[in-house]
Image 1 (cartoon, helix red, strand yellow):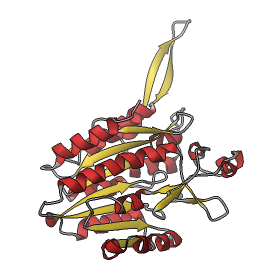
Image 2 (cartoon, helix red, strand yellow):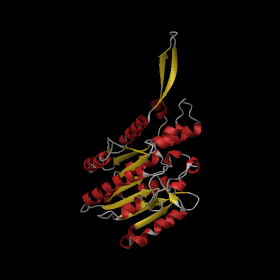
Image 3 (spheres, one colour):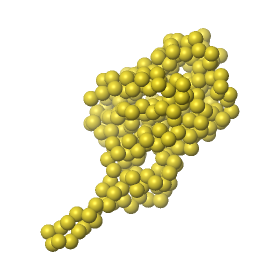
Image 4 (cartoon, one colour):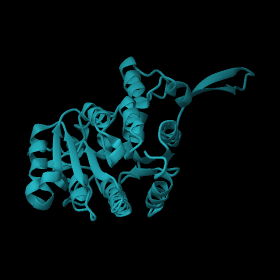
Length: 309
């Protein structure tokens, strides 16, 4: 799978999604402000962790870059939307602009060029330069190392997981949850990822099954996503029909999986849609610490509800 980050149009200009991207960033911004305010005087150091951090900025496509040819070149063409163009803050830049500040910022990005761009954020934020860490590497591996190597008794963190497709492995999320100190926002690719891998016939290729096994952390998803119904015919015989799960069912399944490992999970994850109203992602929230979970959930559920249809 191609990492999300900015994608090139062939001109070296990074490209991102449309107004659904604004939606997720507005929710994240609201939570980060509330989080750092709530922990401003707490006896913990605070960390913001951004996997798939990109360049720190995002640039929306121009109309010339979003024609049928550009859309067909993407694995998931639903995200090739001719939305309004302009240079906007990405999640990394947004976190650095948050007040009160985090004590540390960790940006994870696999692409060397985008890591260089992330390093340049120090120049734009000289007061935070010593607090910024850029890790070049595969997001799952870096997150597992970070989660296991730190002493989380004296630290609290917010993690933003924003993959392009199905790169995040469930075992990574389990390691994050085990810290009991990390609040996680994750975009689950309910429409543009999972739903695309589920054949209506129920005959899912082995490689696709393996990808979904890694994403969901179990092989039991198949029996949840496919049901066999017996429908009577005019001739008195029953015919079997395979019924594929809806995007709502898929999203609910993932959110329930999160409840098995986190102390609190938002009951109202937000469906993010493109300009054609097709569901792309489910924005989910999970609170890592039992003591802080009640207030974290109140804030997150309020933000997820605001502006939703």
